Length: 285
Image (cartoon, rainbow, N blue to C red; front, side, top):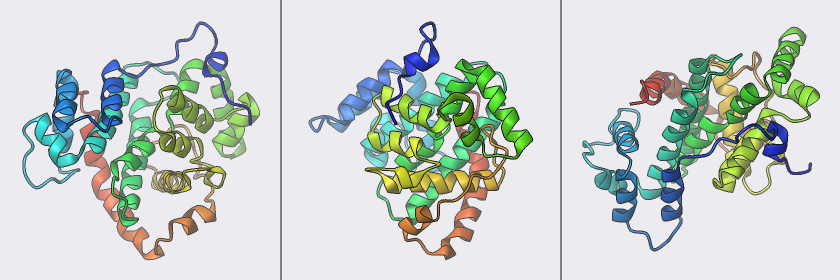
């Protein structure tokens, strides 16, 4: 498939959303091996709103650190540089899109589904003994970001796809391809590439319905694929899809997890998701 051009797809008069400048500074610092923890803390601390949101996150029961974290410097030490960068990305993107009025979409239902998918991905990654589960959380959180772009910039075409999906009892992303020649997963992957986010995130988002097409990052794509199915099956919010997308069996087989982990994983998700939604959506504070 030829590479997508977001500007061409959205039209010359539509601005492609941009990440906050502070995130690019933070990301560059994290990717520089010479950067110290103190320097990372200093970058985050220049944005008081971001600092407050991160401290609230890391002190929540959702993350479960044993002692209270009082400062960003302490948070960098306890949580880790990459993990804190990932959480900064998650909360920054939610803040970017929360105030944007989008027809056809219930924002709370959308973010509930996204956070549920991220939480499920975090849980599955922990069972897989991944060292940084927060990057899986972020991938799950962003997996349907393409919907926001389509709902906002291609409202008529998206409405047509939604109606066809509902009336025909068909999976939404398949109908999107018929109507627009592209689906929300492809748009989301291209959006993350445009933002210069890690290729592992972009591919997980792009291939979350088709993990068998993943190239370099089949693990990430498979985890998000399964997490999305779980969140849809449990009806934890919605991004517009009315049906549970089909499972690619190879995605589960590739994780090499015992089927016995599913019940406790789902129980963990049910216990954590309400707190996670409240934590990430509470008034943006």
